[in-house]
Each structure stands twice: as C-alpha cells, then as structure tokens.
Amino acid sequence: MKKFIANEVLILNRRCIKNPEKGGAEIYTYHLAKALIEKGISVEWFCCHVKGLTTEEKIENIKFIRKGSELTTHFWGFLYAIKKKKCLIIDEFNGMGFFTFFKKNSIILIHQLYDNFWTSQLGILGYPFKLLEKIFLFLYRKKTAITVSQSTYNDLKNIGFKDIKIIHNGLETEAVNFDDKKKPNLTLVYLGRLKKTKNPEDAIKAYFIVKKLISECELIIIGDGPLFSALKSKYENIDGIKFTGYIDDIKKLEILKKAHFLLVPSIREGWGQVVIQANAMGTPAIGYNVSGLRDSIIDGKTGFLVKDYKEMAEVIIKLWRDKSIYKELKTNALLWAKNFSWEKTKKDFINYLKERHLI
Image (cartoon, rainbow, N blue to C red; front, side):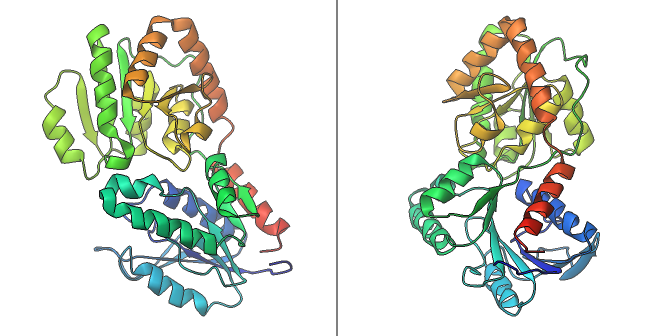
C-alpha cells in the first residue's frame, strides 16, 4: 500500500454509533472517524440497519449507510466496498470481517478475537465459529492491522500478521483530584453489559464472600443486557445489591468516583475501557487474568489480576484491611489514567496513516 494516498475513507463496522448494542469498539471507531473528518477527509460508515434508524444519516459529517442485519451487513458492505477504488477501506473485524482482504486499498481494525466468546455464548455449537474466525483472520494476515492492546497484537502475530500497530483507546474524562472522598462503607461496582461473556454473576459471588467478613459493604451493578432481568429478579432483594440499569456517563462517573473497586470478571476483553474510566475516578480495578485486562490493569500497581471470583474476594478483603496499600493503588490508578485521551488516540491514528502514506 506504499504511496497510496486517499482523501476518502470507508469504514465497515457491523454497528453504528446509534446502535443500542454499540460498545467500546464503536466508540473507538467514532473517534477515529471524527479525527479523519477534522483533517478534511470524507468518511462513510457502512453498518447494519436497526429499527428506528434511517437507512442513511449524517452525524458530525460522518455519513452512515445502514443495510442488512448484523450478519447480512457483511455481505452488503462487501458489495459496497468492492466498488471503492480510490478510498481507504477500514475493515473492522468483530468475529467476522467484510472480506476485503484481497483489496489493495484496505486495512483491518480489530479490537479482540472472539475466540472463547463463541463457546461461551453458543456452547458446543460455537466451536465451528471459533475455527472459522481463525480461518477468516488468516486470509487478512498480509494486511496492515490496527489493534488496541498487546494481547490482541500477540494473537494476530500467532496467526501470521506481520504489520500491526497498537493505538490505545482514549478517555472521555480527566482524572479526578487526589483528595476526592470515597464512601465510608466498602463499595464495589460492576460496570458493563450484562451478558455471559462478561460474567456479571461472578461479581455477585465475590460480593457474597466479602459481605460475610465486611458487613458494611454494597455492590452496585451498572448496565443492561440479556441477563439483566434474570439477575435482577434473582438478586434485587438481597441486602446491599443495587441494579441501576443503563445510566448516562455523568451518573456513571459519579458512582465510580465514590466507589472503592471496579470488578471486571470478563472471560476476555479487547482492552477494558471501563478499567481506565474507573482509574480516572481514583478507583482501582480487580479483573480476571485474561486478554485485554492484562493490558489495561497493571497487576499489583493499578489493580489486580485474579483467577476467579474467590480470589477476587480475597484481594478485596486484603486491600480493605490495609489502607496504605489501597492508597498507593488508587494513586497509581489515577496516574495511569492520565496516559489516555481521545485526542492522543486521534493524533496517533492520523500520524500513523500519514506515515504509511494512506491519507
């Protein structure tokens, strides 16, 4: 792709920024798209269509084209992309890409491999999809790849990718002052989609263990998702557990600022955006020792990586009883969060594309 310079960019992502199922990948992509717009580059974003949204729409000069379901949009997006000869195509791989691996003017953007997501969601039926994901990625191995963490970088290297650039996620808010007050009672927070791959019930199991030894303790569960109704029905009447459902960023950050720990029991993450959000509020994270979280949590310094909910509870109890260690953890978390901003992400992205003569 040397000497290929484009003033138009086509982003292929199954979801748009207005999709109710959007996540960290879409927020990241949206900031990259805005960075391109700010440089005077035309941007189209092809994605699936969902009820209540128009088939075409402009948001902050980004043109959104919506067609097909989350599955069939890959087919429609592919047909749209093959007609594009003079623009840069950013093919976003989320379990599946848009099959532009043969086009000279395309690169791949990938946050994480789905890998064990498939079997977590589909059981034994997920194994063929797990294999297909690796096969599809193998077809892209000669492409320029952008990812967000060392974990995914290593995964891509193992598949055969040679040209990989890590551009970290940003952060919407600045870190709080060091003297911000926490709640007097131990406060734990789970923040994220309530679905199998995030293991939200493990956060509740850890809370029960902690509660036996620290009676003045609460768990706030922030987020919505497929498991919301079942979990709320099962646990909402348990003392100390509170479900907020979906809340806006202002309320979310206020809760994180007063909390002592963020619990992240995911089976895999691309990066762990919620970790840095919590760190910026002076709240360390305790997460599972898995891809993505190994990158966003510096084990023993900004938070802790654990093997299961039992060890998660043990670490919480230990840190609550040793305030000096907790204070150091909190300070380190704040300093770590200061390394991230969307302005830095956007700058790194644009500089990289310019260095590679892609824009």
